[in-house]
Image (cartoon, rainbow, N blue to C red):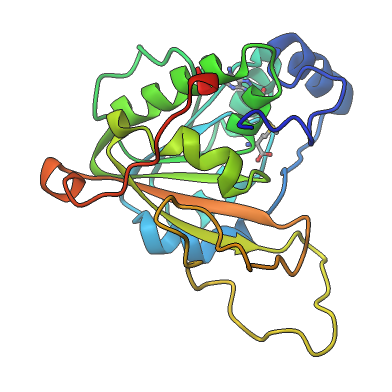
Length: 250
Ligand SMILES: C[S@@+](CC[C@H](N)C(=O)[O-])C[C@H]1O[C@@H](n2cnc3c(N)ncnc32)[C@H](O)[C@@H]1O
């Protein structure tokens, strides 16, 4: 079952009109899932500050502003919502490190191949997965992300989707991605007394299919998953594990 609709509500998160209406109504800023401060160790480890970064589905999040304050020099932000992009263009007019463009992640043909060192996705693939044509949208989006990454580049996906519902999409051989998984609790989660002291900064050992080991227990059942996908060259690919795709993914 690759279409995890468990976290989709009745709204159509895959629909630009839904997001436009939401951004008109709410104004201000909001970061889904996690703020940059919690993601910083992963972002800094895998994406250097002089990288050309693409933030897909930026919404009205503060993430890119925080990254710019942390030294990132070049962040292109895109979103399908014209309302969000207009708001963000005005807000960050004076910040040369941040650029904003209205664009659908399923068609980023405006950018030439291998334009970016890093692509960051916090909640955008998740939104597409809630749409009616989810598997096709996901394949289009990830195909575009793969095309835009330079060899050695990183696609960092921050999502509520565990490996059973995300790895079938991320492990398509056409992308040549090698994936490392991290799991972090939702903000404010308090560990039960006596629970493990293991650091969240350690990668999670996965099975040869990229799945969680059967006995793996999530400390926080509403944890967030960070997939760090590195675009490999052909030599590295020959050693990579391929997760077989089933017919219902497309
Ligand atoms: C869950 S919100 C996450 C926003 C932001 N990344 C954050 O972390 O707070 C998903 C965002 O994806 C955008 N989005 C949805 N479908 C899209 C598409 N096809 N192309 C580009 N952006 C899209 C929405 O407009 C929304 O801003």
